[in-house]
Length: 418
Image (cartoon, rainbow, N blue to C red):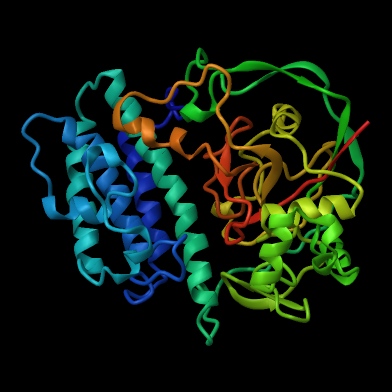
C-alpha cells in the first residue's frame, strides 16, 4: 500500500465524508431490505455496514493499547475472510443474520467512528495513517458492493421495486466507434511505490517492464445495440465463439442476454426500476465469458491489462461518470479524446488473469490476506463504473472477478492486433 492521495483534505474530514456516504447509500432502504442476500456472492447491506466498521476496529483501534471491542461476539459475524485473525460466519449464510438489528449495527458504526475521530486528533505514525487510508479505500469498495448487491436483491423481487425512484435517465450522444493505435514496445506497468501522495493496493505493485506488441483499442466500450446484434446473430447458441466452460455455463444457466435484460431485449432492471434499454449506452452486467465470446464474434479480442493501463495513463481518472453523479447506470459518452469512457460507466473486462506482478510482496501480517490470496481463477477488470465512488480508481487499479460473474457493472472494450 502506498500513501493516501487526498493530501489537501484533513484526515478527519475525509474519514467522516467517506463513512457517511455508506449510510447515505443505505438510507433509501427499509430494514428488511438490508438483512437478506440474494445469492452466495452478494452480502446484505447490514453486513457491509458492519464489516467495514469491524475492519477499522480490528486493524486500527485493535492496535491501540487498552482498547476494548464494542461487542467481542460480533467479531465472528463481521470478519470476512481474514483467517489469521479468527473464524468467521459462513459467507452464503450472511442473510440469516436477523440479529443484530440494523439500528444496532449503526450504533456500532457510531461508536467506532467516535473512537477513530479521537485517534485522528493525535500525531499518528505512518503505519497507522496507512491503515486508516486502506480502511477508507476498503469502505469505498464496499460502497460499490452495496449498490450492486442491492440491485441484484431487488431484481429478484417479483414487484421489481426501485432502489430509488428519483434516478434520472441519462441521455447523451455516443462517441463514434473506431480503433485507436496503442503504445507498443517496452513499457512500464503498475503503481510506482516511490511516488509521494499516491495510494495503491499492494496488488498494483511493483512497477515493472512489459513488452506490448502492435495493437489498437476501440475508442469506446461496446454498446447495447452492438451487443444486441451478437444476440440476434445467435451468439448465445454458437459454440464456436465461446470457451468450453463459458458455453456450458451459458447453456446451464439459460443465458440469452446480459443479466437484468428481459427475454425480448427491450427492457432492463436498473436501480431506478425496470426501464427501456438505451441502445447507445455501454452494455453491462456481462461475464468474462460473454465479453470474450462477443469479441471473437466481432473479429477482435479483449485487451490485456497492460494495453488498457498504458492507454489510460494519460486520462483523468476523476473525469468519468461515477456514482457521485447520481445516475447509477451507464450512459453513452463522447468527447474529443481519442479514447473515451476509460474511467466510470462500466468496468472493462480484460484478457488478463488476476496474477501477481514480478516481485510482488503482500502486506505484512493479516492485511496480507487482502488481495494476494485471490490470485487464482479470476480475471482483471479496469476503469471503474457508474457505481464506483469518484476518486477511488486510477490507471493502475486492478479489479478482479470470476469469469462467470455478472452482477457487477461489467462491460468490455475491444482490441485487435496490428
